[in-house]
Structure formats: C-alpha cells, structure tokens
Length: 138
Image (tube, helix red, strand yellow):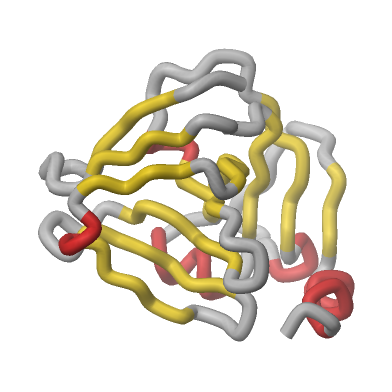
C-alpha cells in the first residue's frame, strides 16, 4: 500500500507512514481492550514512519516486547511499537481514507470476550502461541 499522512485529534502529532500493509490485525488482549475500550484494529506500518511533534508523544512500555504511544495533549492512540524491530502498528481509524483493507489475523483469540464476534474468517493466535513466539525475542 502507498504513503499516507494523518494526525492526532488536536493536530499536535503528524504521522507519515510509507509502507502500510492493507492486511490489518485485531488484538483481543486485555491490555489492548483496556487501552482503547475495544479490540485494537492495527495496521502494520513497518519502520518507515515519521512523527512530527514528537514532544507531544508519550510512551508507555506495556510489555517486555512493545510500547504504546499516544498524544499527551489530546490522548489519541498513535501506535504500538515493537522494541526489537522498531515496527509500528497503528490504529486503522487514524487513516480514514485507505482503500482495500482486509482483516487478516486475530491475536489472543482465546481471551476474546463473548459479547462480540467478527464474521471475517482470519488466522488466529492464542495467548500460549503468542507467548511462545515472543519468548525468544525478549
């Protein structure tokens, strides 16, 4: 997918992502649901991401393998960034004009609450599968 620009609600942080993967993921873990009040719909943006207004970006180390970034002014959730690779996952909702998006993977599918479900058929990874994957990356 191509280059895309966006910003937080207040405009204090501007984001340019040059390599957005149109196959987005959904995370059902408790951290993501607590952070955003719902599952995290994430676009994989790689490392070719530019942030303007970095002084307004607040980081929170939410796990041993990643941090979350948000605007300290308006609270907009900006990204989930992997510690080892520097890859960014960004909320789908930050990029309102992307076409051709497709839900590809659901993470922590074993802890998805029973009060919602998706009709999309996707790959899924359980908590145990994810912990095993990241065990050698920490």
